Image (cartoon, rainbow, N blue to C red; front, side, top):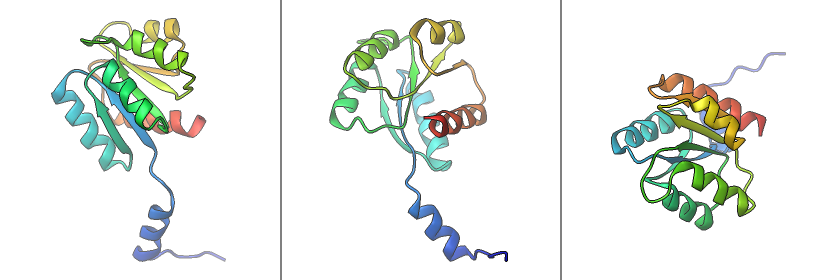
Length: 136
Protein backbone atom coordinates (compact mmCIF):
# COMPACT_ATOMS: atom_id res chain seq x y z
CA UNK A 1 0.00 0.00 0.00
CA UNK A 2 1.32 3.45 -0.95
CA UNK A 3 0.43 6.44 1.18
CA UNK A 4 0.09 9.73 -0.67
CA UNK A 5 1.10 12.75 1.37
CA UNK A 6 -0.81 15.96 0.92
CA UNK A 7 0.69 19.41 1.51
CA UNK A 8 -0.45 19.47 5.15
CA UNK A 9 1.11 16.13 6.09
CA UNK A 10 4.35 17.08 4.30
CA UNK A 11 4.49 20.28 6.36
CA UNK A 12 3.74 18.37 9.58
CA UNK A 13 6.48 15.86 8.76
CA UNK A 14 9.00 18.64 8.11
CA UNK A 15 8.07 20.33 11.39
CA UNK A 16 8.38 17.03 13.29
CA UNK A 17 11.99 16.59 12.18
CA UNK A 18 14.16 19.18 13.93
CA UNK A 19 16.46 21.22 11.71
CA UNK A 20 20.17 20.48 11.95
CA UNK A 21 21.88 23.25 13.92
CA UNK A 22 24.96 24.72 12.23
CA UNK A 23 27.45 27.25 13.58
CA UNK A 24 29.12 29.22 10.77
CA UNK A 25 32.32 31.09 11.71
CA UNK A 26 33.81 33.50 9.16
CA UNK A 27 35.05 37.10 9.28
CA UNK A 28 33.80 37.96 5.77
CA UNK A 29 30.38 39.54 6.48
CA UNK A 30 29.17 39.15 2.87
CA UNK A 31 30.08 35.46 2.80
CA UNK A 32 28.59 34.94 6.26
CA UNK A 33 25.30 36.50 5.13
CA UNK A 34 25.24 34.42 1.91
CA UNK A 35 25.98 31.19 3.82
CA UNK A 36 23.33 31.95 6.42
CA UNK A 37 20.64 32.59 3.78
CA UNK A 38 21.65 29.57 1.70
CA UNK A 39 21.66 27.20 4.68
CA UNK A 40 18.41 28.53 6.15
CA UNK A 41 16.68 28.12 2.77
CA UNK A 42 17.84 24.50 2.81
CA UNK A 43 16.30 23.88 6.23
CA UNK A 44 19.27 24.36 8.57
CA UNK A 45 19.03 26.30 11.84
CA UNK A 46 22.01 28.67 11.52
CA UNK A 47 24.01 30.62 14.11
CA UNK A 48 26.88 32.84 12.96
CA UNK A 49 30.09 34.16 14.48
CA UNK A 50 32.66 36.61 13.05
CA UNK A 51 35.77 35.05 14.59
CA UNK A 52 36.90 32.10 16.66
CA UNK A 53 36.35 33.70 20.06
CA UNK A 54 32.77 34.58 19.13
CA UNK A 55 32.36 30.99 17.96
CA UNK A 56 33.62 29.64 21.29
CA UNK A 57 31.23 31.98 23.09
CA UNK A 58 28.34 30.57 21.01
CA UNK A 59 29.47 27.02 21.82
CA UNK A 60 29.54 27.82 25.55
CA UNK A 61 26.10 29.46 25.43
CA UNK A 62 24.56 26.55 23.54
CA UNK A 63 27.00 23.92 22.34
CA UNK A 64 24.34 21.67 20.85
CA UNK A 65 25.37 22.22 17.24
CA UNK A 66 25.21 19.40 14.70
CA UNK A 67 28.05 20.84 12.57
CA UNK A 68 30.42 23.78 12.33
CA UNK A 69 31.55 25.59 9.17
CA UNK A 70 34.92 27.14 10.01
CA UNK A 71 37.09 29.66 8.18
CA UNK A 72 40.77 29.49 9.12
CA UNK A 73 42.01 33.05 8.52
CA UNK A 74 40.23 35.40 10.95
CA UNK A 75 41.14 38.19 13.37
CA UNK A 76 40.86 37.93 17.17
CA UNK A 77 41.02 34.10 17.10
CA UNK A 78 41.79 32.15 13.94
CA UNK A 79 40.14 28.89 12.94
CA UNK A 80 43.02 26.65 13.99
CA UNK A 81 43.01 28.10 17.51
CA UNK A 82 39.22 27.85 17.68
CA UNK A 83 39.37 24.18 16.63
CA UNK A 84 42.00 23.30 19.25
CA UNK A 85 40.17 25.22 22.00
CA UNK A 86 36.83 23.63 21.07
CA UNK A 87 38.24 20.09 21.08
CA UNK A 88 40.15 20.85 24.30
CA UNK A 89 36.84 21.84 25.91
CA UNK A 90 35.40 18.41 25.11
CA UNK A 91 33.21 19.24 22.10
CA UNK A 92 33.12 16.62 19.34
CA UNK A 93 30.96 18.57 16.86
CA UNK A 94 31.96 17.73 13.26
CA UNK A 95 33.75 20.56 11.44
CA UNK A 96 33.86 21.56 7.78
CA UNK A 97 36.93 23.75 7.16
CA UNK A 98 36.72 26.59 4.62
CA UNK A 99 39.93 28.08 3.31
CA UNK A 100 41.25 29.97 0.32
CA UNK A 101 44.52 28.10 0.82
CA UNK A 102 44.86 24.32 0.90
CA UNK A 103 41.69 23.49 2.84
CA UNK A 104 42.23 19.72 2.56
CA UNK A 105 45.75 19.96 3.98
CA UNK A 106 44.44 22.08 6.87
CA UNK A 107 41.61 19.59 7.44
CA UNK A 108 44.07 16.72 7.74
CA UNK A 109 46.39 18.74 9.97
CA UNK A 110 43.57 19.61 12.38
CA UNK A 111 41.69 16.33 12.14
CA UNK A 112 38.50 18.04 10.93
CA UNK A 113 35.87 15.95 9.20
CA UNK A 114 35.49 17.85 5.90
CA UNK A 115 36.89 20.75 3.88
CA UNK A 116 36.13 23.06 0.96
CA UNK A 117 38.38 25.49 -0.87
CA UNK A 118 37.19 29.07 -1.35
CA UNK A 119 35.59 30.02 -3.62
CA UNK A 120 33.09 27.17 -3.50
CA UNK A 121 29.69 26.29 -4.92
CA UNK A 122 27.03 26.85 -2.19
CA UNK A 123 25.23 23.68 -3.34
CA UNK A 124 28.39 21.66 -2.67
CA UNK A 125 28.58 23.19 0.82
CA UNK A 126 24.95 22.25 1.52
CA UNK A 127 25.54 18.68 0.27
CA UNK A 128 28.71 18.41 2.37
CA UNK A 129 26.88 19.61 5.48
CA UNK A 130 24.01 17.16 4.97
CA UNK A 131 26.54 14.35 4.65
CA UNK A 132 28.46 15.54 7.72
CA UNK A 133 25.31 15.77 9.85
CA UNK A 134 24.00 12.40 8.62
CA UNK A 135 27.30 10.68 9.45
CA UNK A 136 27.59 12.12 12.96
